[in-house]
Amino acid sequence: MESFDIAVIGAGAAGMMCAAVAGQLGRRVVLIDHSQRLAEKIRISGGGRCNFTNLYAGPANYLSANPHFCRSALARYTPRDFMALLKRHHVTWHEKHKGQLFCDQSSDAIIDVLKRECDAGHVAWRTPLSVEGVRQDAQGRYTLDTQSGPITARALVIATGGLSIPKIGATDFAYRLAKQFGHKLIDTRPALVPLTFAPADWEPFSALSGVSLEVQLATGNKKTGAEFTEDLLLTHRGLSGPGVLQISSYWQPGEPIHINLLPERDATTALLEAKTGTKRQIANLLSEWVPQRLAHVWLETHQISAEARVADLPDKALRRIGDALSRWTLTPNGTEGYRKAEVTRGGIDTRDLSSATMMSAKAPGLYFIGEAVDVTGWLGGYNFQWAWASGVAAGQAAAEYVKGA
Ligand SMILES: Cc1cc2nc3c(=O)[nH]c(=O)nc-3n(C[C@H](O)[C@H](O)[C@H](O)COP(=O)(O)OP(=O)(O)OC[C@H]3O[C@@H](n4cnc5c(N)ncnc54)[C@H](O)[C@@H]3O)c2cc1C
Image 1 (cartoon, rainbow, N blue to C red):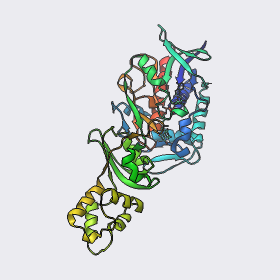
Image 2: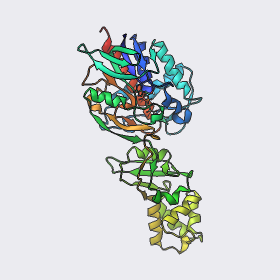
Image 3: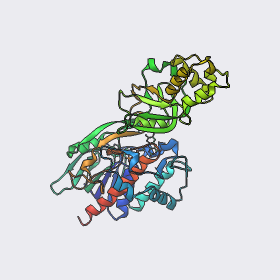
Image 4: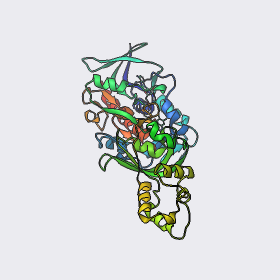
């Protein structure tokens, strides 16, 4: 039987950070993962360059049934702290847009930093290794039944992530374990995910696959919905691109989404202004504002003749077209699911976790961190910032918890 102070299950972003912190505080830490390859999500993130944080990360960038939960950990471990860590390891980065920081080289640089930090904390690696069951004895010690025998630890940190991308090792382990210890779950669903449409509805647009443009997207009401101005990408089956991924986290099945195709201008005013002094056809005018192929298909699906001259159209008709351009309403029939989702919305209900330490209120010495808990970030480096911040909070707290035990 192997024995440690702290066992961390899940060697992804949150788990490695947590193990490194606890190890460097002098605790004997074991880090367990069932995957052959380490931290696959970091490796594939940000198109291979890992958008590892966002300069502006704050509680408003996260969805949760308990919106204030993430505040404490995010305030105590900030994007600047992670940047300082990278600097110490001579990793360089650049800002892409809206505060999104990416590695100059590749995501492997981040994985290497975390591995070196774990080594500095003398973390013991057990990978690949599957945990078949977890028990807690009367003294509060945890025993993990694994394929290579039992491992015991005074504190246990669960960092096995959410359900997205099962083919690289995502499982529901965290949720099952949380339930075993009496925790509630917030319904999970794919988030930061492309939206799909019924084949008949999408048929006119499917040929536009690859077309992209900046739009304003909105869904839901003031309280539960959101609005983003970002790129939209048309695909064979529906909509993708950063704007759609953002809105997908807020989208509820059955609800429509609204697209303002001309976020930079008032569409009706622009159409009415174009009426004077031009003999242009509406399709030509629209093609100055949005990609030409989209302009044609959009007009066709709105039963507007592409050849109609703007000057000949009554103001009332132009107003109707202006309204439709600034509020193109579409109702998705679903999403591309966990196969394509960058994250999982929902998860372990944070109301039974300490926001300062991530410790369970149901089982002392048990911690849940990272994507497994009901904290879901926007697209743009926010999810990794949560993984780092919750990992550090639990690493420090677990080290304190086992002190002297
Ligand atoms: C394609 C893609 C791109 C992304 N890009 C970005 C980005 O650029 N910026 C950003 O902020 N976020 C990005 N994300 C989201 C980000 O990767 C996750 O939010 C983050 O990795 C969550 O960290 P975690 O440690 O909680 O979970 P994970 O990183 O998913 O780690 C969980 C670990 O647990 C292991 N595990 C799972 N089940 C078990 C089990 N039963 N037993 C043992 N081990 C288990 C897994 O093998 C894995 O190593 C992206 C996600 C995807 C899918």
